[in-house]
Length: 249
Ligand SMILES: Nc1nc2c(ncn2[C@@H]2O[C@H](COP(=O)(O)OP(=O)(O)OP(=O)(O)O)[C@@H](O)[C@H]2O)c(=O)[nH]1
Ligand SMILES: [Mg+2]
Image (cartoon, rainbow, N blue to C red; front, side, top):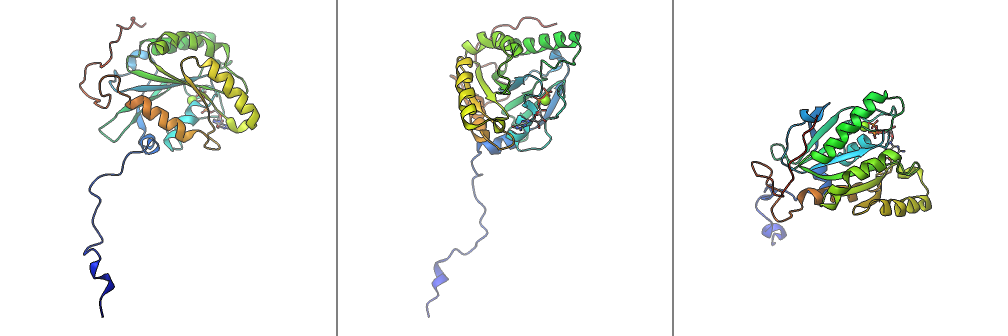
């Protein structure tokens, strides 16, 4: 009798020789806490691309970061507006090989915050958005039931020159699960006009809508190489000519 299994491999325990390719979602899942800063000058200078999540208080910034990174409590999310009061940075990429950083910024527009604190924060935020050299992209989160507020418009004015110079920009319409299909489509077409040179997308943490698309976009932003490879994270001089940042306070 011939043995049908005689041509089978000798050992079934061979390990794969190459690691599986990194997917944008797998990459997002590597996120870990890097540092927190109450003031701009406390933020460490970083050479890898940084992507900032900004928007009014309660828009869903921290929840969005947790959803994208598939981690329940990486960023503090809360029903109570004003939960995030510092700039929190999260590293992405394999341990020891950070290739991008996410920044969760405090929300603005929360009525109960004392006026002095509001003004202070608006200055810190504006300074951050204008001077942070490694800032590669901004995700502006907006609850489409409220639309862009006056403070969102101020932020858009602040970042417009940088967007024109190539800074990536996405308006993310959060809590899309609260909208009907028609409302969602309408909100999206308005946001696309408001985004200028940037993009707009619908997102729902609850229904996991838009998650893979946004992960892919952030991956693309972080790994795009305008002339020089941006995957060389360490000890590289700035690959793009950057203006001297104005001095901060
Ligand atoms: N239905 C629904 N609720 C959401 C979604 N995303 C966030 N939320 C809720 O919105 C509230 C605010 O979310 P956060 O992520 O803390 O908002 P934030 O923008 O970080 O707020 P600040 O830190 O105050 O600036 C929480 O109660 C979340 O559960 C979503 O996609 N759908
Ligand atoms: Mg928050």
